Length: 308
Image 1 (cartoon, rainbow, N blue to C red):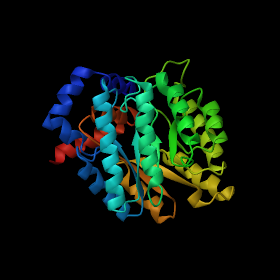
Image 2 (cartoon, helix red, strand yellow):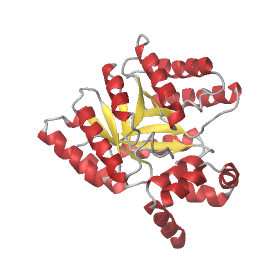
Image 3 (cartoon, helix red, strand yellow):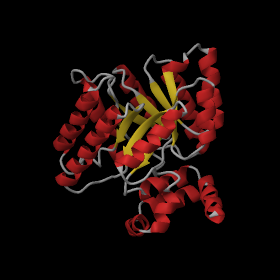
């Protein structure tokens, strides 16, 4: 019930406008969003690096409506890659194709992302661009983009994408990506999808996640397991030990502001951890989807407000 409510709220343009302009909304989201500027994200990344975890930085934004907005979004990412290099951060970038203008001009969006991947590939050491997954209307388009980018000379291992375990197509999509040895971030999924497209029961989503997780861990390609579910994390650790999968062959990925204690304990145990750090002014849809994924976050926020 709460999950459906927060997903519906994430799609409300009127509430989004009010929330993103209000000091109340900005303060409420601060636990999960690093800030509004590149400098905010860089500071948050440096703090995470200090306890031994890597970072993936995402400038929040979706569905730009013109080429100028898309190019401005891309320029911010170019600046971000420059800052990562200058500060020697253990950080890469994550972006959405709708933020790069895929609905405005598909060729333009491809060229924009290709430019960012080229910059990441030219860095020393090479950096990495994660093309995030959006709702099901974008699944095939996103996968086609990533396959094409990865096949270009010099891009192998520099660009990857995301698979959502609640999608019924996830197993086939993973097989296709692994055939090209493309890096995957595996998550459960946070969009409202119809039953014919996605599993609806938590047990089905979790079972799909665990099955795909084991496939990825044994693939010989470096992947990210994005989850805060301790039962699944413990299963991954046990599987790695049992199957002799090295700690450095994969990493756990978690969201900024959620389970910092677990992030730090995994690092201390010797497991790889990467924290996803979002920033920007267009934080509302992301924030609502985080509440949909884990309604317990609502209680956490309420407690923080009562302490202030």
